[in-house]
Image 1 (cartoon, rainbow, N blue to C red):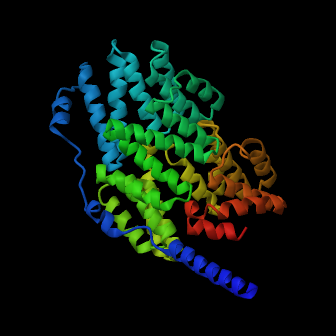
Image 2: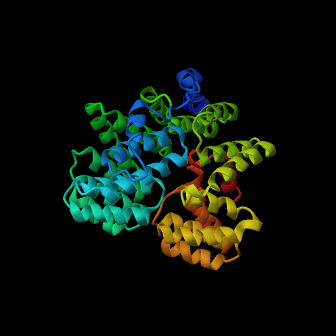
Image 3: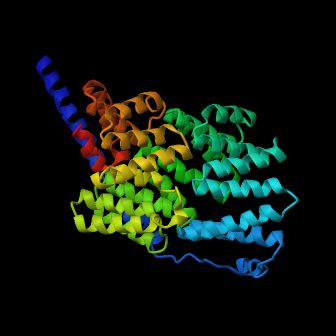
Length: 429
């Protein structure tokens, strides 16, 4: 009887494992779910509203309403096309508005702050956020922006003190910032809990902008947590509201590539996006897919497209993180990577920028300096897989295999988030 019981248990275990494996192998993306959203949609870069207000602007114009209306339109054109020129034109319009207004000046300071945040000009953003606060310290919108900027700059103690000023567990804007704060602290479960509360708020209010934001960001967090089906479904929810949303389409392309190992489908999605929305990092994903497929020509073409875009001075520091990582891979450009990493640290001293500086030091032969940087500024201060991978490399280079091994085990659990190319790198540690 005992033998029969053991055999039965073994049989059930095998069946269970087979079912689990088959579920794991099942593809997540289903083209029929989103094919209708992939039709090329040429984003409009004008409107009767834009033409009306733009026509009122002359070389010596002082009409405030014209500049603010046109700035809002330019910002929308940037979001729909990815073209940096529109974000720069919005900046120029907002700077003019700030210059000429004497009423509600803090409102225009906040708008310019948001523009600078989009450009990763965080120190300049802080100047205008502080200017807004000097005029209206108690306005929640100003406090929200101050929190956002200080987090981006790595001023975490200051950000925490500001967050306490507008703490309200029932307020959408507080809830999403509480989520961001917990994400910084590496508390993914709490982050998702807050984001799900924000989702409830957005759905109750039926606010389109809030729904788009919360669905797409919650999709990201579900992916980080390994809940890829929920991630996929929330990217689809985003597209149901905005069929041209490039960010959600890129998210689905990542699932097709990293989870389903369906490079053709991932490329098909990305190509549909790039036909009307040009953003440099989308080409990096195409290059990563090409590397996975061992297609050197496709990788080279995608990389050339990336560099051709980011070499436009209008992008400023927006893609420094990517540039440092890429320059670090080539012995001919590793000193350039180090120079850029030092510059980026001056822009914002965060654990993420310190890990970039550590990486650049490592590839330039300064392994002890790299070790010092991660132990002082990175370890236990960020939980991003990319930073952990850099730490593992540095520990290994400094003859600390136990520490590298511990991180390797953690990184293997983040294989989906890092992707199959990085996963191979992790396995070789």
